[in-house]
Amino acid sequence: MVEIQIRSRLKDFLKTPEGDWFKGKLTRHDNFEALARIDDALNWVPEDFAIEDRRWFMASCFGHFMSMHREMKFSGGVIHRLLLWELDHDGPTDEMRFLLGNHVVRFSKVKFYLIIGLCFGVVPHMNLYVAVENGIYQWYFPRADEVSLEALRVVLTLEKFQEAYDAVKLCLMYMLNWILMGVDGRFKIPV
Image (tube, rainbow, N blue to C red; front, top):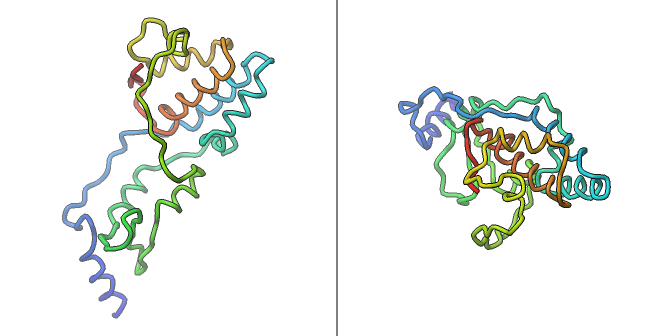
């Protein structure tokens, strides 16, 4: 009886009251099977800088994804249902709290970074992108104002990269937009 009362009182602190809940619809899809495309692109780099390119990619914040199981599926519905149980709280702003059963569970930014393997700390100041003459966009996507994911896929399968780290840069762009963000295949990457 006491557990039911505690749970009822905790429900008063839900960020989204139960009356406002809706069934979530998945609008983004995971594409982890596409990691093989990145693996292939890094294998097609000319021998004189292939080892270095692979090392740079593996040392990036996305490198650890190359060693994960390729058939893994992400469920947006599970995340949606978890977020429905998020509690409003007066604790740290970089922490989320959820009501799971009769327990309040905490999830902080630091724990998130540790789980996904990204570095955390001060975000460096980012300047606007300045196009470099004969840079990666001009070389692989001449006269393009935007790059489609299909065009990026084609470049990754050409088996020919002009400069050291071109494969790394293109693979990072592909990893972010297609695999992690799971954007629609019609999405265009602005240049």
